[in-house]
Length: 277
Ligand SMILES: Cc1cc2nc3c(=O)[nH]c(=O)nc-3n(C[C@H](O)[C@H](O)[C@H](O)COP(=O)(O)O)c2cc1C
Image (cartoon, rainbow, N blue to C red):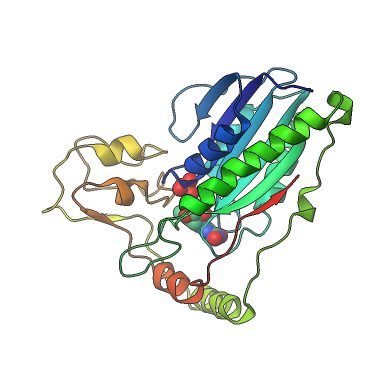
């Protein structure tokens, strides 16, 4: 069997999910490729044609699919087409994110034929609190391209659409998780909750460093920064994705969350990407 059209749908404020998706598509070598980047509030999701293959890559926030990504996927339609689902997480854990994405996509009429979990540099990672820095790295991207090749092989091995079998995402292998760091992490989070410790709602801007170039405005997925008022962030709209922090060329924006040192200290051990076909 042959699939002529591939859609890559990605929500990726700090671009790690997008890089993983692009590497997978490279391995698929489709004749027709449609890339739909749903990170920014522009453009409508195009319906997926019957028989096409859609690769969806999204980041994990709090063990779930980033809520804004789920919202942007509301218009997804894919009756009679196939999907590959990828959750990208910051080397802590992805909990039920893949299951949540699977439920959404299956409900839209897709048959899920492959799934994966990849590690991306954590959105909160800084020079002082590094978390999965530089990932996806060259090895991760080569692994993603190889995953794409394996999907292409699975498709070509199937006699027809009926024989292109689906996967149960619950069967994806979980990466090794040392128990102590996770316990320490959970204990600290519960302590903050119990004490009612306030966490910063938005990144902060150093007005002396800000040159009002507007890159933060352009990179914000939820219009939380208004052009001309770059030193402020609308708390109700901020999803704390840290795109504005990562892409500020003047290092004027920072997000001083206590999660950064906690994650950096407890999730140093490299987790590996996992695939299911
Ligand atoms: C609000 C928020 C919550 C996050 N929660 C998790 C999490 O539960 N587990 C994890 O391993 N990484 C978590 N991350 C890290 C992201 O999943 C990771 O950095 C991902 O690579 C970001 O994808 P992007 O580059 O496509 O935006 C979180 C990031 C943010 C901004």
